[in-house]
Image 1 (cartoon, rainbow, N blue to C red):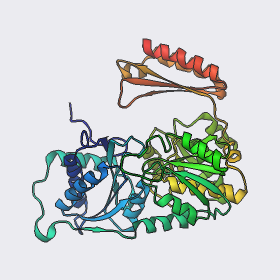
Image 2 (cartoon, rainbow, N blue to C red; image 1 turned 180 degrees about the vertical axis):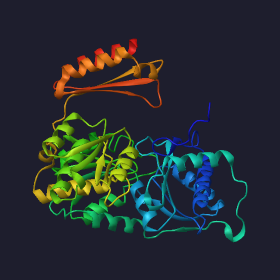
Image 3 (tube, rainbow, N blue to C red; image 1 turned 90 degrees about the vertical axis):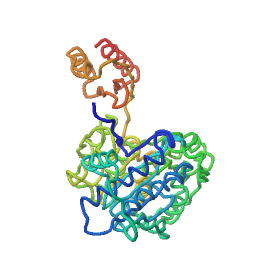
Length: 446
């Protein structure tokens, strides 16, 4: 058996100082710099390094800087900024590498190392594999003297990123009252100021990070406080970011949650109306609700479906030269002005649609009539046996025939656990429950 992969679907992630040690962070950063030098030795390597405010980020930042500089790379520190800011700044500063220290929506004890290539793009699989090999091999030689990397701070990083967002916003937001939940994370300083700069009246919650409270009962995975704040303040909407602000979810004026499918639909319709939705195609993953597909079909917009994970959405956008894609979780990519999901940019586009049409968020979101959904996790001994089982295939075909165009079935093996996830959408919750439980029984027996 080969060694386990360091990189998951979104960088190297784990329990800080447990799975993700300073030694590992140093090794990954140094290996990344060495691999980049091998690919382009024409100039001295420059790396942008940012982090979210979790306490372990200070420790891991020091390790990453040591790894980069010991491999001869110069480092530009941008301190606490959102993940999409690091992607943007990597391109804006002309850097060869971007490093973001964050575990996104994970609880505080976790952390992660996310890498961006020149231009602010996520690393291709081939480069990740080369970095893993370089970590395993270690460094044969190290630069000395003037060849050792140097470190400086980018004093204009936040202003540069904020200006980029305001240039990319479709229109002013004057008259809109917004409550923003910053998850006590990376958006705490920049998001309220950007939204105010766009013209909105802004009330903030969970915008006082202390290194320990990131994602603690707040943010895009814990919406209760945002719902209460929107209702109490009479705001037009609420926006919830996760710890590194590469995504967002929303709450309308009544406190009803607006998910990523609905946000993506709102943005797709707005871009199509302005002529900016290339080929009238939007990218979504297999987890998008069938109601989203119905809404796009009725609007004459084609949906290109990918596997789960924003990296697959990004790959499809680049391969097909498309302008918009996203996930139900709220990762939405506007590829004409960003190289990765950006929760602040998404919020600006959604609010611009509200402002330009004088329409409430709940009414805009109603274009997607979400079908009831049931998800059952089935523990299995062999995921491959389930995938190849004629009995399972027959049961899935029968279930899909039963549902017709009013529902769908999705069986998805977990990538990390001995589970098969059975997802069913149907016209009623009872029908979805019945079919999902029946299929779960077949999967278990197979």
